[in-house]
Amino acid sequence: MHRLIARGAGRILAKRNTTRGSLRPCAFFASHNRRQYGTKKSEDSPVKLTSDHCSGNLADVAKSIRERVDVDFGYNTVPKPRDHLLKYQPKLEELPTRSMLDSHTTVVLPLGSDEYIRERYVNYLGRVRMGRVMEELDMMAVWLCHRHVLLPNLPKDVPLPYTFVTLLVDKVEFSNIERLKANYDIHLSGHVSWTGRSSMETTIYVQQLADGEYIDVTRALFLMVARNATNTGSAPVNPLKPADETEKAIWKEAEQRQKQRRAAHTESVLNSPPREHEQAIMYNLLKRTTIPDNMDLNRRVLPPKCRWMQDSQQTTMISPFPENRNAQNTIFGGYIMRQAVEISFIMASIYLRGRPILHCISDISFLSPVRVNTFLQMTAYVVYTNKNYVQLMTVAHIWDVQSGEDRTTNIFYLTYKADKIVDEVLPRSYREMLLYVHGRRKLLAALKLDPQYPDDTKETDAKPKATENK
Image (cartoon, rainbow, N blue to C red):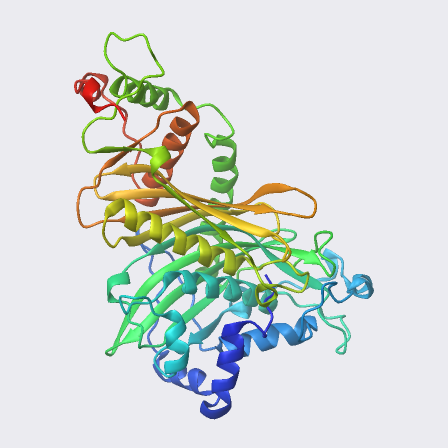
């Protein structure tokens, strides 16, 4: 979403750049950008695009976005009117095609060159706060949309009559987090990799140059939607036309992901019944937690080294403030993602009784906007475990004290890895069983594993003892 330069990071970066110079990050990156990402494709290495273009640091990006959409400093309870911009919205056929290289750029997070900035991105272990990184990825995704959309007939003195919002974060896979250092600059590089009529997929890579070696941290896939100036309807975007074989290969991968997104939504256990083998898993769970030869189905028992799902959750209430708003006075998605990552880390740490490593974030859904005058409730649930992995589902829910309305706005799925075998989480109710099956699917997808069908004779051998009733 559009972010205001007035938010904390933008203010701090802008101040520090008056002394350090905003071009320094670009110059630094240009001197090291001879390292090619490569176009080779393997099973775990997607095709990548590279260029020498650099947009500066995050303050430069925030300033550019603010100028393009004409966002003023200062908070007003009633957002600045933008109705007069609706007449400038073009038709799809008026928009020229764009290539992926047109939007490709790099943005620098100056952790190494600015100690003051670094303080906001370091956790108590001296490592990088991944919630903060997710927050900046949201701004990067918006900036890539700005770089892609080109309106040739728009007068120079008229702001861009568009609003870009985050619809879905497909998958963010992490690697080398243990090697990520808080005292070296982080580079965010990306481009628009697919377009529909009003939607755009952006692909973003996070890297760090430490001790003369590039560290690949993550690849993030954001699905963005273009809205009109007042955010009341969709807006067309420039069609994407691959310019070479590399871009054609990237487009092909993106097209396949788009098909998988549609199928995944239709086949979700929250929208359709569990599959046959999943029903067998649910039945085995019931047998494992029920006393043999006892007809009281409401009496459940907990096997050794297991925990109930209902006891494996954490909730917090948050009051969003105007500094985290966009042009429509709604809270931007990056802030919500940061809060979700951080409460999920807390829940995973409590469950593991140690420090978990974030492995993957997948299928972040943005169901509706969060207004600045509502309260935000974040709840992190442990929904599935397997060996040394823990699958969390974190739900964002808003409360409007004026209207009395409450609704779910976001759902996040986070996979954490531990350095030991973790206790198994078990469901008690049917609803929890559905979440268990849902979490199992998410973990298998995060680890890129095929579903394994249960062996009834092995899974039901262990019988719980009545003395372990909780």
